[in-house]
Image (cartoon, rainbow, N blue to C red):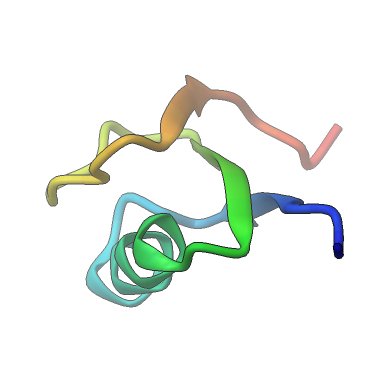
Length: 57
C-alpha cells in the first residue's frame, strides 16, 4: 500500500492557491495539507493547516 502524501502549498490567500488546497484536502491519497501565505486566506481551506508565513527571506 502506498504512503499518503503530505503537501505544502504557498500562495493560498488568493483564489488559485485556495482552489489547489481545496482539491488536495479532498484527495484520499493526501494525508496532510499545509497552506502558507503572508495574508489571511479569503476562501475556506477545509482541513488544511494554515500558517501565516513569509518564505521570501
